[in-house]
Image (cartoon, rainbow, N blue to C red):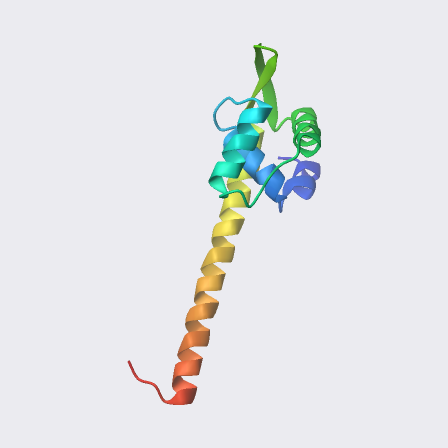
Length: 119
């Protein structure tokens, strides 16, 4: 992975992350929008302008590729480079989650000792 790709995509935007996540299987734009809403319980909604701008940029950068057109809808899928970028981001997010859990555990232990609680 070249430094430009890493600089532009790591860390990723939520939009970029969800697009790559959804494109682990072939999908068209509308399907990506639906999947993201389902995955996030409606918390993340990608507008058509944002989606198609991101798809265009990701395709140009080699993270996704056009597969074929079906009923006037373009189907895309993640490339090996896109999977590598997604895997890096997943690893980064897992590290963040581990750090949060560790911080919360230490904070809980410190508060417990300060107040003299013993469980």
